[in-house]
Image 1: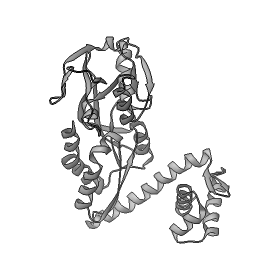
Image 2: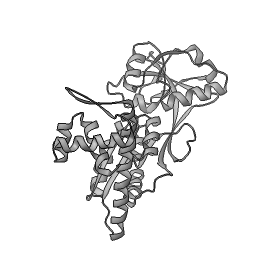
Image 3: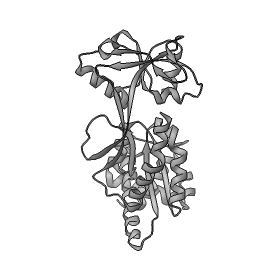
Image 4: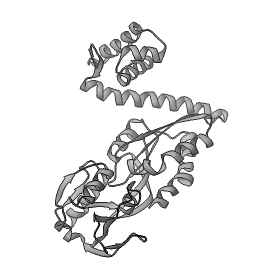
Length: 307
């Protein structure tokens, strides 16, 4: 196995075609096909299914793609780390962020990075916290901004922002002050069973946190629907189909500016914790260290203000 084989495989897999990959890599299709075939022989697995429309990944190929991208990323980091001995801040910075953070911060993140590090490049990957942790472990991203739920081996996390979670329902006249957007009612967690919930699936950090705390209190959630996208959750809540458990940031950033009933949850109060995470398996480059500092000083405050 060599780097040219991995690079060829990644490009073919992501572009879905040997022809398109050959154009991107400025090579010919037969040479690219030989590289991928040699890789398959060495691994003793078929990675790509060839068909008239292009290629698709086999189950083995799906697993290998994640590893190959991580390996190529690590090689790039090594080269970048050596360049920094000459005082050059260049190379590539990969960051993974949750959808809620991406909505508020992506533009300033990219703009701030390009201003601060004109000789470097950045890639921003968006995904649920569970996937971000996997990408960190594989080396696909240098750092992630995610929701912290449980301790994860080999992942270093530092909480940077804490948000209270509320029970969010359809608007009812007089239930809250629209200008202040403050809840005027409260319920203990044990009474949440009276409310049908529209809540993300089990892979979502907020779902895992709410269920964990509820289980500790002997409370079984009444789940009406599982929906991952916050925008879709608010659409369903506004129609009176159920209630959501979300931070006020979610309703404040609602594009339709709808009014919602906001109920504080007590005994105990629920919180989500936004954290900066890195992998202890991979050494951070000087670029990554400085980019994280820029993220904390220029970008994270935007998320706090949006709340």
